[in-house]
Image 1 (spheres, helix red, strand yellow):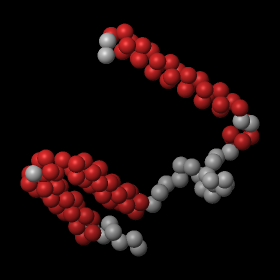
Image 2 (cartoon, helix red, strand yellow):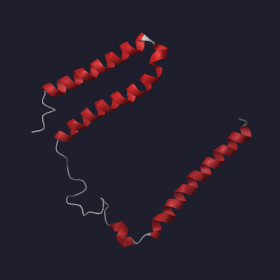
Image 3 (cartoon, one colour):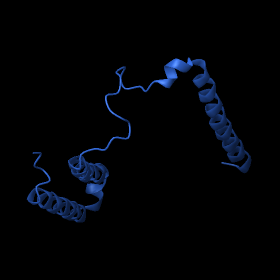
Image 4 (cartoon, one colour):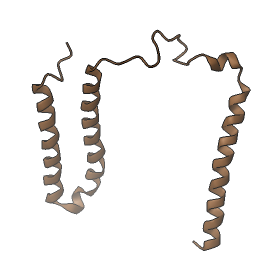
Length: 116
């Protein structure tokens, strides 16, 4: 790609970004003020304050979800390179899963998986 083409591409991306900001601001002014003043929650009225606190139990569930989520993020690309890397990729994955399993076993032992 030549320097001129790169500069035109960069200018085009900047114009699209600026146009997107102005288009969203314009579209935001179209609606009525009464409609935009109410919170949106699938059409229902809120039953509690927006900054109310969650029970501490939810943070543990969130951390467990993130552990499993990171496992999946790591496993998808791993399936693509396992044939090229050979046995070292399998060993690395089982080491990673062992670390996660140790974390889950610790959470289980500490009662994090007990809901009540």
